[in-house]
Length: 419
Image (cartoon, rainbow, N blue to C red; front, side, top):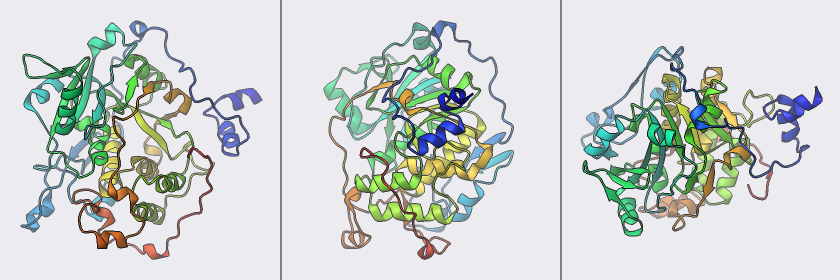
């Protein structure tokens, strides 16, 4: 009985002992309990039924532009605080902001739009601002090569960089290929920050590829080394899940993760603090054993999804938080889970399995932007250009309908030298 509780990584006993630091540190990588053969995997004949949200619609026009002749449409729209609050009230039919406002950017080439209409099973990745070249996946069965579309979303800067460094093949329909990857070119990137642009294909996979029934997202610097059909069987179908993501290796609380982001200079420190104050004001408590989730912080570089109405809604809400606040999506994930409560079920799998899904390659150059080094809000006032984003994170500069001066962030104990 004791072993059954301690050996089960999803059990409350295991989670409690792990949180108290009473268990040995897990290995960096561990064997994934995969099915033996992709050819033996049985694909479900029917989709998971939509029981809570049955009809999901999207806001497509940035209405605030109509009231201001000088305003330009934003990809994420000018979502109000009231609209944000209403988007968390679940109904059978919902209409929410979800990027892709008319004339807001992120347009695909017609040849790519036509190609992705046939894609029901998708492995998606992305490269922005020329930081990587596509890494060819390995151990992909012939069945998966025929079943999946491997779609690499790139901006024009990255397309030119890729052309200058690897062979790009063009087919008779105008499609561009690097090995198994079909390059999907996004024209007019919607944000100033490449990191924020990368959230579009990562989180809004269902909007870029609306015919997809299942998708696996993997970050552009990673080389997939596990057959995608085996990943769907392991993380979705076996446990009847619709959304799967790994837990973070070091952090369980978003306030721990926010502290690490500030120390590593991954975004402006005062804006990270403001982001976290808003979440704390709205009731997002630090992670504890009393929560139903094993962690509030994911490793977001691999996401496995069935595109149901509810998982699509979750992705929209997650993206809206990233659009409104900071581009550090691991801070927003747990907040959206908290707001949806028990309605949104997902599988958070062990981090050591996550590290066995891919090989990690270095970026061709290190990403850095001036906003990441900001220590105080006064720096934004002194420097009118190059710091404040003009098309994202506008919620950080919009008066908040609450008294944040009375909010004090919880103390954070550094749990890992690496974190």
